[in-house]
Image (cartoon, helix red, strand yellow):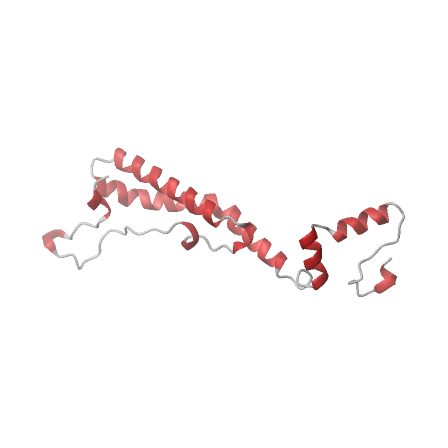
Length: 145
């Protein structure tokens, strides 16, 4: 790929002020509206970079004019990049809602997360064995047992 291949060519007659092909795309954090709670930002950026390089290389090889190859590659890249990352973006949103819910923000929940205990699962297991159990945070108090 020639160093100047990504530069938009000047318009006919040497006037570069007219519309030029769109030669800008986004990758990584700039392209994906994700919170940090799934820890996938770096993975998405690396995947995007590989996909962009592959798409550009294939499109430029396919067309005799590199400018045409680049102009056709970017929309293809963006469509595939957004399709591929949609699951991670949605998972990130769900994790943010989970971690910022009023229940998750309670002090006891922080301790449970820090020590890796799922109190709802523990309470369910105790109840399955016929042992009355509830969370001290349950507003129903002992009526929940």
